[in-house]
Length: 325
Ligand code: PBG
Image 1: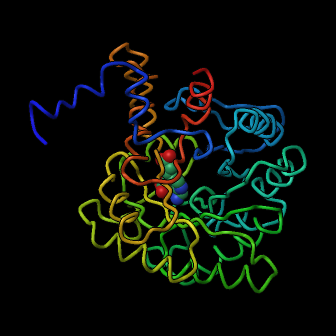
Image 2: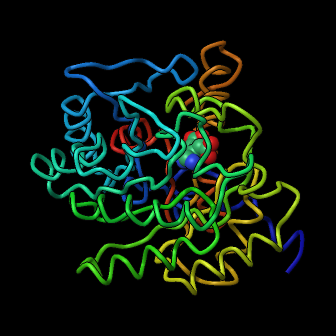
């Protein structure tokens, strides 16, 4: 059929018609809210480059979780900022660590909320890299051993899903094996499978105090120029036992989201990262864009590309907005 028989505008005439033929919908059910948990009591340190986001003490994080859950958001992902950092990130894998405490406290007060934990060392090392540094580079296999300890410690504290974000080779398989051997066969793995070395993480590094003290993360995170390699990374993680595959960042990697969903048909998560959040917040505060409108458009594009779920600092705003409709 072609014009004049086919007139696409016929179905755009009013909101009822548009709603009738709408292909993609956002739902609070598919949102994951990131939380930064730090030391102290009753404290919230605002993150300057991320308006509306703060580093929270465990008790305040629990309160935040009550709100998140009441908005219909099913899950949070926790990032820990320890009191003390050292060269091997010891605070990441002690049962008394800040994330472990937060998991237990959240599970006690808001048991229905899914708790996902970021499994990485960069927030816990004094050099800010995602693993053990040997000869000026992050050493893969000794880092994997520590990541396994971290994931197990999160599982013991009650995490539902562990999310390794370090990009070491072989870590998903090692974590899966260790979880299974320790009775945690029901704990799922959300693998940061295609994680790019991105400038969009800068505000997160302020929030998590995890900026590398020398060099950068290009020897372990992916080159933004590569797409086929992302599919190989995803395939490896699926073979090693990943239950959910993550692509990160989201906005500038929608082609990867699309290809991963098409090729593997696995649950795909996309991380709408800190820099994407900060840009929209800054432009919104300047009155240059309509922040609310842009947020919905952005998240919709991520879903349209094929993401089943979105990790986003906008989760609460979006859940409220969807509720109000
Ligand atoms: C830890 C980690 C990072 C992010 C999530 N997990 C930072 C990094 O790799 O430097 C970034 C999230 C964001 O920017 O919102 N490795």
